Length: 288
Ligand SMILES: [Zn+2]
View 1 (tube, rainbow, N blue to C red):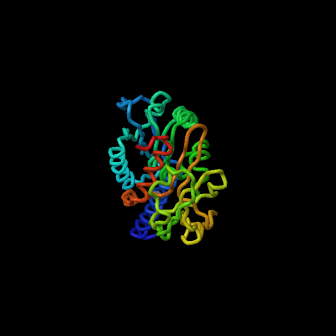
View 2: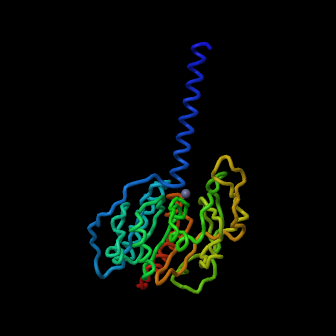
View 3: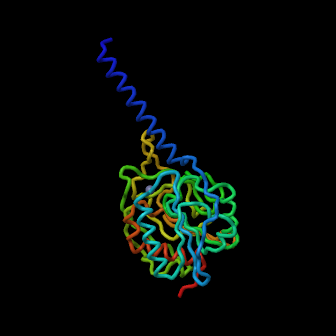
């Protein structure tokens, strides 16, 4: 073989191996998150006694929705200021202990992905919710990188399948469900239109006893999956495709919405209102 041909072949093989390795690494990260060290030292908290308190947790070890996390942090800071809530914003898990969690009305998993807290910290959060605390999950916090049974059962109620890829972001109309809880319905429109990355789950959380706030018509989106070698992956939510839901969990409350892939979503008044309501409801905060 000619020397130049050998060099070309070796170069091509090296590039293919390198790209394959990078792709495998990316898929692993999305599915599982990379192992990380857990923060176990209790942070110094300064929460005024007379204010509702919210813990905004945006740690990621899996896929990171950077733009969305930045935009939502700003939105939640503004919301807290307006409502006179105390907001503790962190990407470290040190506050996930019984004593410090008890200081909060609500914990928000803000596009948090991967295994972000250790087993003991998970247990503390489970007890916190079952004893009356509120837990809210946004978009990426509903993917399948968490590997946490209690969380999947009580916050999500469904196992994540995939998100559409062609196109990834699609416009859909959201339909409000008739609910009796006025806290959650406050100022929400009966219909609104929004472009997002619509997560597809293997089950419908409605069948697991969750209450639905908003659905889209799942027959009107193109749900093709995000694994390149699986064509037309369309796991089954069908027409009734919830995008925001909630339930009582023990004495506490859990709320999840799959909305929130883009930073732009957090400037939509409808999403801001939905999350505002969710915090009041999950945190059992009395409306002023
Ligand atoms: Zn996303």
